[in-house]
Amino acid sequence: EAFIATPGHTWVSCDYSQIEMRVLAVMAEDEELIKIFREGKDVHSSVASRVFRVPEGEVTKDMRRKAKVINFGIIYGMGVQALRKNLGTDLKEAKEFYEQYFASFPRIGLFFEGVKEYARKNGYTKTYFGRRRYFPEIKSHLPYLRASAERMAMNAPLQGTAADLIKIAMRRSEETLTERGLSGRAHLILQVHDELIYEVEREVVEEVSAIITEAMEGAAHVAVPLSVSLGTGRNWKEAG
Image (cartoon, rainbow, N blue to C red; front, side, top):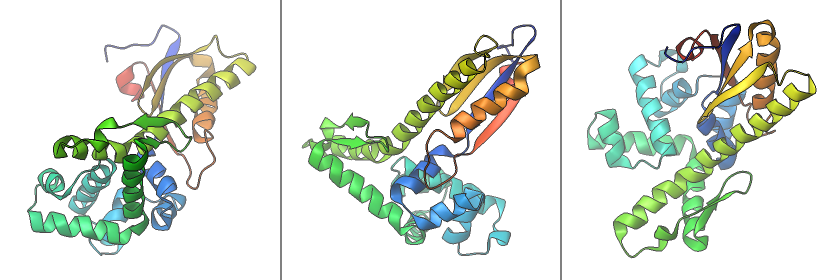
């Protein structure tokens, strides 16, 4: 609430929805995960349905919470032990969830194994757009350094691609605002991970919001839609 808009202006927050999960679906080419996003379903509920083997209409809040933990855990290279701790369950159940996840989305496991193998061979990983991140420790003789590098290598293509997308969106947005004579009336204040925050003159909030949203959703033509959540307000809290 301490971050307030200039008088006569409104804060506009545009946030990619579940961007890393969408990137995972695209890069792993997993048809099941792609289908979830194409159909506009809630990814955590849909994953819960598959992991717990129940119809989507019978997914409970606790099942969805656990699926969310699994989804984000998988993205960050979380193993069974870390999953057990984050789920607050025992090792047997965590192992079952882990195995059922990869059985439900087989291409994801193959993708991560491929990423690790590529990193071991070449010393780096690549984003969807070809940007590299190097991992010299992946060839270390020390097991803990090697394991840490492997976890980071698994996440780098996903987080890196999300970072590429937001930068492409920033450029597209600024270009369109300039073309329409709005660059002096809408100012990019912050980029926080997968979120862009603008300070916009009240009279043009609707027009500018549409431009930013289109720039973000059209940043790349990929197998799943890139979805954006929009918020406005007098301060950062309201906009967020």
